Amino acid sequence: MKPEAFNTIIEHLKWELRLHGFISSAASLFYDIIMDHPLVDGNKRSAVLMLNAYLFRNGYSLRGIEELYELAIKVAEKKIGKNRCIGMAKEKSRGKKMTWEEAIREAAEKTYPILVKLREYDLKHERC
Image 1 (cartoon, rainbow, N blue to C red):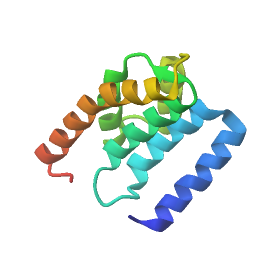
Image 2 (cartoon, helix red, strand yellow):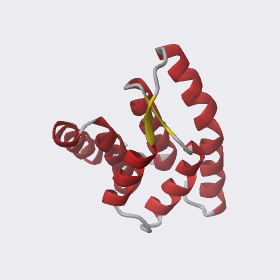
Image 3 (tube, rainbow, N blue to C red):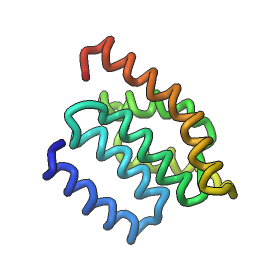
């Protein structure tokens, strides 16, 4: 892990949360993890997990969660900017009342296939 990159991401997340709310801060965190590479391996996968965990924890989920794979790839390839990433998260998010256990189960069930695809993409493109 690169502590300086991770610390920068956390500070920006706090600022984003105060100014724009948790959906924007979740999308910002997603984008920053992918672009700043605070981890040696698995930045896209970690970003997907963090986005889902953050939204589910706050009672939200994403419509079209399968699209996170494409979004993560587009961000990594610099085909989509941070503002568009945040805009997409706002468009796709929806409130959903569920218990913490339900949120974890749904996040795990829906996120795992995306993580597998992202790992396969990294292996194929030698981006581990």
